[in-house]
Every structure is written in C-alpha cells, then in structure tokens.
Amino acid sequence: MENKIVQARTKRTKWYQEARFGMFIHWGLYAIPARGEWVRSNERMPKEEYDKFFDEFDPQDYNPREWARLAKKAGMKYAILTAKHHDGFCLYDSKYTDFKSTNTACKRDLVAEFLEAFRAEDIKVGLYFSIIDWRHPDFPHYNDQFHPMRDNEAFKDMKHDFDNYLEYMHNQVHELLTNYGHLDLMWFDFSYGPMNCEKWKASKLIEMVRSIQPHIIIDNRLEGSAENAGSIRTLNPTPYSGDFASPEQMIPPKGICDEGGNPIPWEACITLNNHWGYHAHDKHYKSAKMVIRTLVECVSKNGNLILNVGPDATGRIPLESVQILEEVGEWMHENGDSIYGCGLSDFDKPEWGRFTQKGNKLYAHVMEEQVGAICLPDMAGKVEKMRLLKDKTEVIETFFWNLKEYTENAFFFFDNHASDCYPLPDERDTVVEITLKETH
Ligand code: GLC
Image: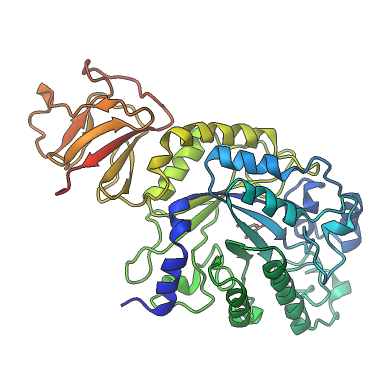
C-alpha cells in the first residue's frame, strides 16, 4: 500500500508526467558578463563589482511572448524561469529587497510578464527559486562551500543571523505564491553538505507553499541535489522530499525507481550548450537530432526532459537555440504522439533505437539503419497494424523468405514493395506506431 505522501505525489504529477517536455530559462544579471550564472562564485567576485551589472541591466528586447511562441513551437508543455538565482537578484518585484529587476533601468517585473506570456500560449508555468543567496548579509559567506567570499579573510569574522535569512527566503517564496496567480511548479535549488532539509526549515516552507497552492509540483532539492535525490527514492519519503527527482546533465541509465522498484517521477535538466546562463563563447550546441533522441530516451525510461535556454543581456534567446528548438518542433509536430502521455514500454530496448508506449500503442523509434528487415524482437503475432506516425502511411509486417527461421519475432521494411536496405525516412528518428493486439 502506497503511503499518503506517495499517493498525493502520484495524483499531483499526472499532468506533468504526461507533458514530458519543458523549457528551462536561466536569465539574470549574469547574462552581461556572459560567463554563466556561477560567474560571481567562480571568479570570487566582490559584491561591488557585480553591482555594475545591476546598474547596467536593461533588456530592451525582452519579449516573453516570443519565448512562449518558441516553446510552443518546440512542443514544450511547461516552462520554468529563474525568479531568483544564487546571486540573489530577483526578476520580480520583491518587497523584501532592492536587488530586483524593477529597480534596474528596465523597471519591469520580468516574472509577471513571463507568466502572462506563457499562460497565453497555454503552457504550464513554474518558477525556479534559489534557496542559496550570495547577496543576503545573513547567508554564510566565509567557509561556505560556494559563496563568492568563501575564502576572503575579510569576511572571516562576519556574523550571520541565519534565521533572519530564512525569514527573508520564506517571505520571498510567500510573495511569489500569493502575488502571481496560479503556478504549476516550484523548482527550488539546492541543498549541499549540511545545508539541507530542516536547515532551510523545509517542513514549514512546504506547508506554507501547499497551503497557498495545494496542487503545485515541487522538485526534490530542498532535501536533495543532483548528487543525491534524497528520500524520494525511499519507501518513506519526507514531506519535503519533492514530487520528482532532478538528475542534471545526464540521463539515468535505467530511469529512476524507489527502493521498492516502483518508478518515481523524474526530470532530466539539460543545457543546449554547456552552460545554463548565457555564455557568449560556448558554441557547443547539441544538434536537434541529439535533443530529439535525448527526449525519446527520457520518455522511454519514464522521465521528462527540461531543456535550458540562456537568454542574453538584451533579452534574446541565442539564435542557435532558436534554430535547434524550431527543428525539434518540426519533429514534434509530426511525432508528438510518441512522446506525450507515453512512458516505459513492455518490450526491451531494441538494437536499432528505442520504444515508448501508451496503452496498446507501441512507438518504435528507429534511429539506426538496418541491413535488412527491421526486427521487432519477440513480437510475432502481437502486431495488429503499423503506421508511419508522421503521415499514417501503412507499414506492412513482412514474412520475407530469409526471415522464416526467426519465428518469435515480427519484422518490417520501410519500403512496402522492395525488401532491400532502405534509408530511414527520418534519419533523426523515424517513428512507427504499432497497434498491439489486445491480448499481447
Ligand atoms: C545547478 C546549478 C545551477 C543551475 C541548476 C539547474 O544546481 O547550481 O546554476 O541552476 O543546476 O539544474
């Protein structure tokens, strides 16, 4: 019998597990130095130096409607924006700090505009919120694992009232949940070393969040991190264990299950190049083909993919990202049925690609050209019919002479007349929709 926390989680995450594909947006002052969102920490940058970016921030081209249209085109069903990252800069009008977008030259509440634009495209919305804050005077500086001033002797004797920081942090979460309408998701980031769980007053925080927006889906990083998913993987998860695990920059080899072997919701967060925040010189973009295959891999293992874009200081999503997402969108337009609402299949991973499945619809994602007929292992007698997903072209099960000995399998060719080696109709991933016989 599932415990209450797990039951509630399963119910809450239904839409989310069907959605499968989301957009992550890392944006903030760090778009100006353009060396990633950790720039202040990595370069041990003093506050005064970082303030220059605050004085300068004025993203004239910020048009979240364009972002939302792009996400929609790419087939993404939800989007998460960094309302506040570790640098402490708020992209919204927090009444608890001056370090916010409404106090910069642009004078705009970037979060409010983001929410409005994405909701208008019918995309579910969430906010990333850093529970770490390198700006707040009561957040530990010296000797903290990551703070920009962690090894600066000048901060050695600085006193911190951590409770005061927690009050600030909880207040900011409270205002996001009360002033910005219905939010679908909160993405807290992150715990490390002794900084986890009740150190953040996590029970209280979760209780507050759920009392305001009970439906809201929450990640697992009040307790865990990308290094350790936390008690969400146990049979007795804590109230702050979160609704999904959040592996980062990797796809779990076998998906993610709890100790009892039950699949749990998870979402791989992946960058399009190698940085979250805008990085001017990082041109190592993943191809559309790689993104498509990564998404299919996640779904075939019962997971989601949230793909990141890092808009620049003008507010534009880099052209490379736009082009990749548009191409992914073309594929999704034709093949989305093999993604949304789909998950792990009853059949083992085939040699030429992957399977995803939804009820009696099995989706064969063929990614590697085969010499002869394409083999559906152990599926003899189980296939009712097959169609190319993108245009419903009939795909015929073949019983060609050279296959006679392999009676436990089913086979097909992409060319229904010839029986020769035939290039894949879509070399990124050709999807065949297989309707299984009811008794399979
Ligand atoms: C890491 C980084 C952070 C990023 C996050 C996204 O935890 O600290 O910069 O926002 O991953 O998953």
